[in-house]
Image 1 (tube, rainbow, N blue to C red):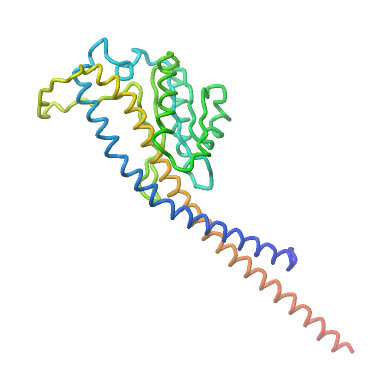
Image 2 (spheres, rainbow, N blue to C red):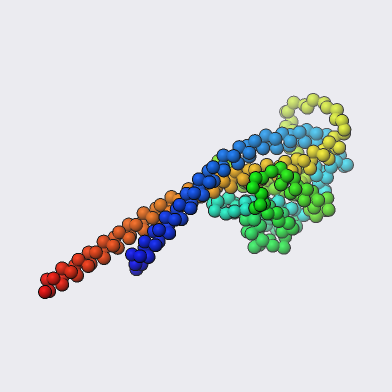
Length: 292
C-alpha cells in the first residue's frame, strides 16, 4: 500500500497535469476560431474553381489531346496517396483517422494488384505509415516550421506532385485530409485530384449557354488545372488545421475532466488512509493506557 507521502506526490502530479491540459485546451480554443474561418472561406473558392473547370472541360474531356491532368494517363495501375496530417499529437483520433482511411485504401488497391505510393505531408502521418509502408513512401514534407499555412505551401506540394506525374511515376493521385464540421466532428475525406473527376451533368439539367473561349479550352485548362490542384491542396491543409485545433480542444477538455475525477478519487483514498492511520494510532494509545 502506498504511503501518505507517495499519495500526496501523486495528487500534486495529477494537479500539475490538469493545469497543462487546461492550458492546452484554452490555446486550442483561441486558435480554433481563426482556423475555422480560414477553412470556411476557402470552401466556396475551391468549389467554384471545380465548377469552372468542369464547365470548360465538358467540351474537351473526350479529346485525345486534352491536358493529362484532366484526361489522365489512360492507365489505372500506379496510385499516389497524398496523405495530409498534423505535425503534433495530443489531438484524439485526428491523425489516426486520416491514416486509417489511407491505409484501408492502400490495402484495397494492393489486393487488386495495383502499385501504391505515399506522399506524406505532416509528421504524424509519416510516423504511422512508415511502420507498414516504409519502402512505398516516396516523399515526406514537414511543415513544423510553418507558423501559418499559406497558399505558397500548397503550391509547393502541388508542383512536387505534378513533377512526379509528368515523370510518369503514377497514374492516379488521391488526397486524404480531415474535413472540419465542428469541434467534436471531423470527417476523414478522400478526394481524387489527378486525373480530375468531372461530374456528369444531370440529364434533365438546363443546357449550358454557348461560350467562345479565347484562347482555346485546352490552353485555358493547361493553366487552370495546376492552379486548381494547388487550391484543392490548400483547402485540405486549412481544413486539417481547423480539424486539428477542434480535435485538440475536445481531447484536452476530456483530459482535464479525467484529471479532475482522478484527483477526486486520489484525495478520497488519501483521506481514508490518513483517517485509518489516525484511528489505529488512537486505538494503540488507548490500549496502552488501559494496560497500565
